[in-house]
Structure formats: structure tokens, C-alpha cells
Length: 208
Image (cartoon, rainbow, N blue to C red; front, side, top):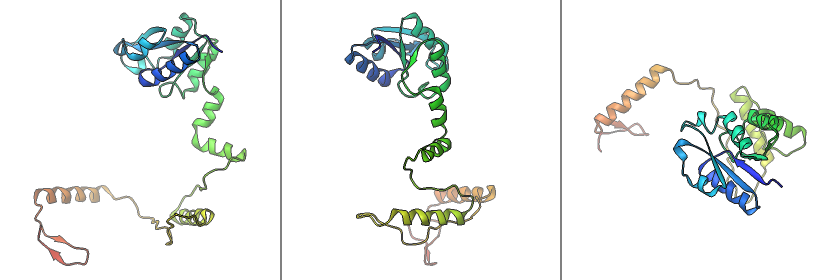
């Protein structure tokens, strides 16, 4: 068990981590930007270190400043909370290089799992059940894959199944002229709401 941990975050995230550390009998060191001086997380922590100006890039995302804060306060580990540097493999390596324990996955695992396609491939290779899906390049392939997923799903009580074939089209994106005309039509309707409108059955209706 660690005796002192630096919490590399702010606000509610840091408050939760600090309270959890105190429940475990571990000292917590907070970090803060000049804009967060006096914040709740700094008051709850046993110590607080200013790591830079308000901009996150110069404070909470500044790895050298956070590592230095942990070292100068005698911390054994760094807890990232979530957000900011929590999913940055470079920060994990920076902690390792400075004899600080990163509370979280290793840099290698973080890099591999950070890529969703690679993560799914590795999970499938490990035999982990995955949500059915397919990599497709056309509407026809997507339609076939959707049908296969529907068959795998089977009948479930309370489920409302779509009986029709999936409606997928190879319709190209609207061109700029089409989008411009749509915007002009919308503007005209706003300016003249009483303009004649055509109902779905083709009848004209000029009423409000």
C-alpha cells in the first residue's frame, strides 16, 4: 500500500479520488492551476501544488510539471482520475521513468486498447464474446451483415423485431447546390409561413 499519492486531476474527479485515498489511510497530494487555487480538491488534500496557469495544456496536461510535483512531495504513485492524462501512454512511461507508479494500465496495454479496431481484434483472438458486426464497403454487404445479425439475435420476449429487409441505399451525399437550395427554401418558409404547402397525397393546402 502506498503512503502518499498525487492526484493528477481537478474538480469532482480529484475530490472522489482524494476521499477514496483517505478512506484507505493514504495521504493525497492535489495539483491545481492558478485558476483553481482554493478549489475543494486542494482543501481536501493533505498537500496542494500549483502546476501552472489556467490553460490545461500548461497545467493539467503538462507532464513534466505533474511528475515534478509528485517527486518534490515524496509521492510513490500518481492517480490520473479520468480525462486529461488518464489515457495517455506517454504519461505512463514518464511515471515509470521517474520511479512513480501509475495507478492504471501499463503503457503497452493502453496503446493497444486505445485503438478500437485493434482492441476488438485482440479480444476476438482471446475468445472474448463480442457484439456481432462486420466490416463492409457497400450497401449490399451491409444489408447482408444486418440480416445475419438479425438471425443471430433470434426471438426474444419483449423485443420488437424489424421484419422488413434493412433499408440501405447507395444514395450519394447531397451536393453543395442541393444544400444551398434547401437552406434558401427554409429561409423562405420562415419569412412567409403562409406560403402554399403541398400535402403528402399531392393536394394543395394554403391554410395555416
